Image (cartoon, rainbow, N blue to C red; front, side, top):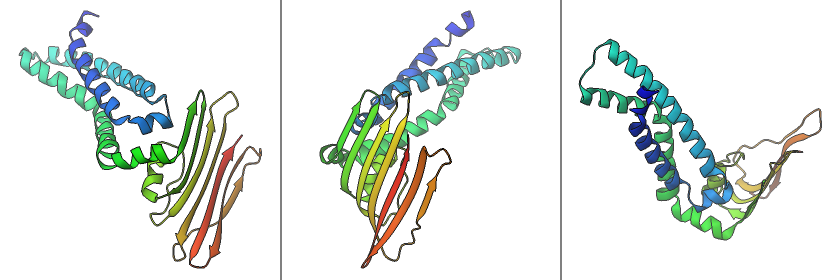
Length: 217
């Protein structure tokens, strides 16, 4: 236990940096989609912090066997190991900060104004019309919805996820595609009749009207 205490400063500094990065990428749009996002990320950071502490204790034993005495060298090894263990979070958060706060900041702010997003208790409801493919992708980064062809336009999204004892979920997506873009119809329904996923395509002039439905109840 005493050996663990000497690594607390490294763990604490690393935890604080990761927490700051998580707060940077969780913008108002992300929070509107899922108000538990910050809680989930804090739990994830705590998990990686525990793994880092275990790794540092193992490293301490290895350095003791190899008689590494210099404090600076021990510190560098400890910091490098902590960064390696948490490299996934650093990479993930950096990418999300670039996407959310730099590249797509204006798009995500506009989506908050032009769409209906209700996240109350255990229910998430989203209704959006006439989205571009870029705007739609901002939802697809967080929600369990399919990615669309880059040529998709005039996209309507109707999303409802109720995370109660009886989990119910439904997604309806309608969008247009040029006639030369290949898109298939399909219809799947489980044997228990509590899950379905289908897609229809209607040709109108030079436009393909695509309707996608996925639900379980």
